[in-house]
Image 1 (cartoon, rainbow, N blue to C red):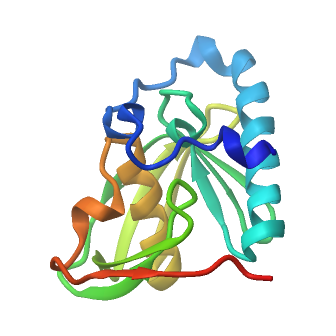
Image 2 (cartoon, helix red, strand yellow):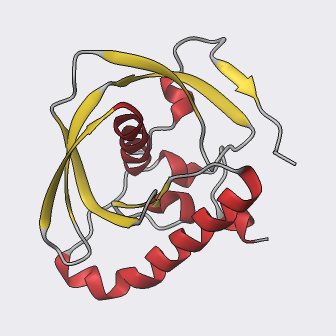
Length: 163
C-alpha cells in the first residue's frame, strides 16, 4: 500500500530540520511533488481527511510543502511571519500518526512567504484553519511534530480509521 511510504512517528527523519531547496533544484522537484500528491490523494481515500503534506513525511528532507484544497499549491522554502498573539486550541491530526489526535495551540493568523513552482516569491495571509494547517506543515520542515506541541500530557486522543 502506498500509504506505507509515509514516514511514521518514531522515524528519526521526522525530527530533522530540512535543507532549503536551491533554485537549480527546481527541475528535480516534480517527482517529489507527484509523490506527495499521490500520497495525499490515497490518504484522503482511506482516512477521509488530509489537506497538505510536507516533504520530510515522504523521506525527502527538503523545505517543500504540497497543499491541495481546491487546487494544488506548492510552498518552497516557506517562512512564517507575523504570528498573531491570539491563539486557538485544535485537535491536530497528522499523516505520520493517523490514529492519533493531539490537542495543540496554534496562532490564529500568520503570514507565509514562499517560492512557488516557478521560483516566484509569494506571500499569503492566513487565518483560522489555513493558519493552523500551514503552521503544522511548516513545523515538519523543522523537525517539530504536533506531539511535541501538545498542550499537556492529557492532550492525546485515539481515532479509528473511517469505514
